[in-house]
Length: 455
Picture 1: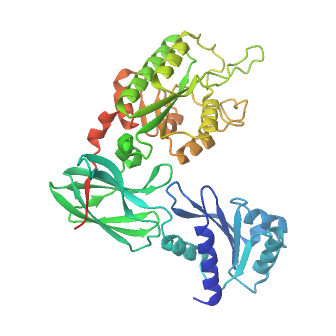
Picture 2: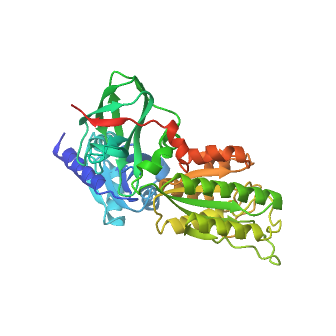
Picture 3: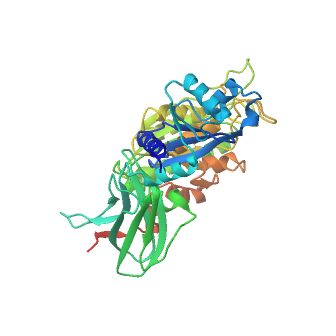
């Protein structure tokens, strides 16, 4: 690797290491064939990721080359930190574009290299970066004073561990056992690697190897396999005992108060059961109720704005608020093909952005889909232009689990019920609470290993 290549590697590695939270790094490559952009950021577990943004050949950027199109191509991902790499120095178009970008983005870092694959260099840098947050293995450990078993995340790779680091633990469990490695972030653990193994009775030595940020491999006489059920179904039920907030959970309930009175009453009854389950099944539960109805689109019929019935309330106060909803008249028909789901989500996002204690679960009880933010083939747009897709994406990135009580087959309920979905009947509520980690009964089906220090 030449001096220029080594300098570029150091520059990229330093910029990636400085990424924190939602910040992004844009890498713009000006090559012999055109412009390629890379979006570098960190996911919820702190793992650095890179995705190819735009790939535009020079002939699509104007003849002669247009400064406006170059600026748009270089800023296609975001307007945050920018590193411009001219990988075809001496060639007219890459050099011209590089000089323009230096003027247009005075804060950008510009470098020239030849014969180097920027994509391959980024992959290497992301893989070689030392951990910025410790990785822990979820399991049970013995309390040194009482001797009682307690759930914990045992550190297996500390901050600064790099690719090739190994850790050894001794696990005791039999049958199907879940091995979940998490990034031990300040707020909540985030999944990094989840494997399932069939273990024989007795002590089992397990070796873990770090393949880089976000990559952990397991080896032992037992066979480890990935599991399609994912983080929510395999591990989230154990959160009340494992979570960093001592089992505290924030249950947010969005409940549709339109349609006929009997259906609204059934929704309220089922939500009441969920709150009872959550209140008795975990250490501490706080509940927020956000009722919603329909947009009217009729200036003579004022619509009911979306406002919480309660927020971060103890379960008994939430149940009282739920009783008040029962006495309110059902909102008039309004618009029949959609409801204020997007307004409810916007209210939840706004309030959660101010902070939420413990793990958050959003349970939506309703049937009508949300309004689109703009023109749509079949549905009227939301008067407030709220975008439900952006809101659910924000909630997903914030680690919110989604549950739904619905009779509808509309695709939106696959999103709002991503962790668990039940019909508007009592039979499915127990399973829904178990899937969402709202009831301790779900812990019996999620075996975690008893972890000892390796000999």
